[in-house]
Image (cartoon, rainbow, N blue to C red):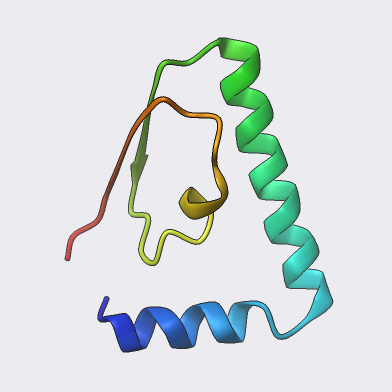
Amino acid sequence: MSKEEADKYVSNRFKFPIYIIEHENQVKFVKKAITETNSKLVLEIACSPGRVTKDIDNVSNGLAIDSE
């Protein structure tokens, strides 16, 4: 995904309040799972523009990979 495509995706993704709420809930879920499992390493596959990854701040070691 090019930078232009990623920016467009994120811009469109956050146009409507329901998608903002969904994003916030996804981030809360992931953060809670990391905390509850005491994870030291997190791997995200197919992260595209990193919409969720960029808001995860409770990880000491993480890796996000995509096909491009």
